[in-house]
Length: 134
Image (cartoon, rainbow, N blue to C red; front, side, top):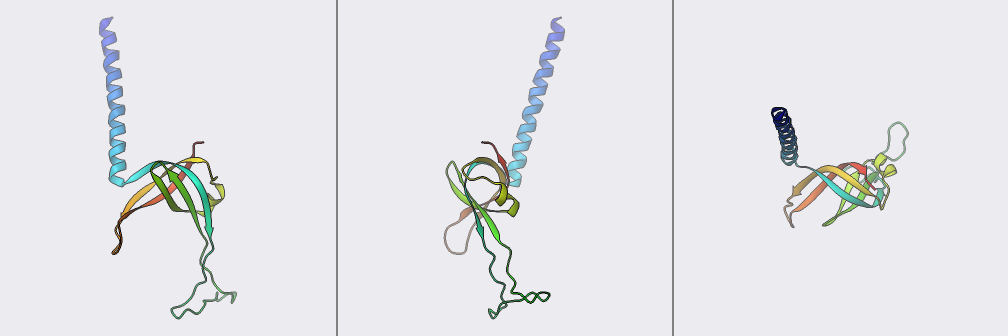
């Protein structure tokens, strides 16, 4: 009977070892791809109206079919707070309509180090998936 218990213990150990290896591989893959999951509080969403399309001389461009002045599409942003700072990220129109300010989300995306020619380097957040947790 002790032989059976020993086999079950080894099986549990092997199971725990395999789970640990899976978690370590997932973490390494996350590090290599520079992906993050960040707990955030959505402070507010913002809609920025699209600007008028102009040519090189600053003359407004018109739509050839309608003859009306053309505008760029509107842009949408989310102002997010997290432990250690705040960030403003571009979001889709659908996310603009569904995200609720003052709620907590798990946001998945990427962080990129931006080094401008002048000024100081900074982190740029590109968060795409928002999953509400509270």
